[in-house]
Length: 358
Image 1: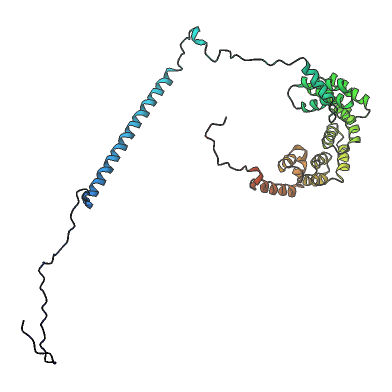
Image 2 (image 1 turned 180 degrees about the vertical axis):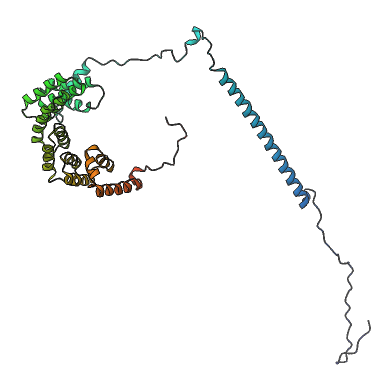
């Protein structure tokens, strides 16, 4: 290499040589392929495979549908043949086959009460300090049961253990009256009246016995005596008013109800009975006033049915009750158009048992 004297110091400068590249440059690089990883399909191949799988699934579903249709047709034809042939006659069963395991008696034991059980129970009932007469309590609890003989036996045991009282005699007569044994019932009521003169329940039951004997006049007398002791009994007042109206004494019954209703609230149901009696005697103003008051203590259906009865026919034809009829119709529409109260809608349970509830 020749020296160069271009340096301003006068020293020769050595020339630097750049080596030329000896490895040629590659245009593209491709990684080596591995045999364990298969080649990815193209979009065309993937679409073809998807179409083939769909066609196979549709063909399989159509085949299952045809099998189900054939099964249903064959089952329906079999049922039609059985229905046309009528009920199948059962084959006679041999005597040896009739006896099954269900009919075979299961070995067990029978409980036998000891002879002292009854006496022990009677002593326990008699020695109770809190309940003086257990038999009377038992009879009261059996009043709604369908077996009246057990109730009569309990009442007789109550009288045997604690003697005859007006209450037990009256209860025994009430049982006889419900059974239709009128002579025995009236004997018990008279005995109760002898033990305790003027016993109020016996007076009321005497009135019921008189009605059963078709003697309404005597029933009115007994009900009057009963109402003298218990003037606020609504059932007795209603019965007395109806008896007086049937016997042609509607004015007397109306006076009795008006005396009772003078200091009663507007929710008293007997205002409806007073309206009927006022309409019977021809007192239109009182009848309409009592009927309007009865809307507070009776259902709208009962009041409307009473207004449409033959007793109020003359009032309806006269037009005096048109305003009240319009108010009742408006109240009926409001009552029947209102939704159900929340107390009548039961909550829905989400838990459903797996077993069948019988």
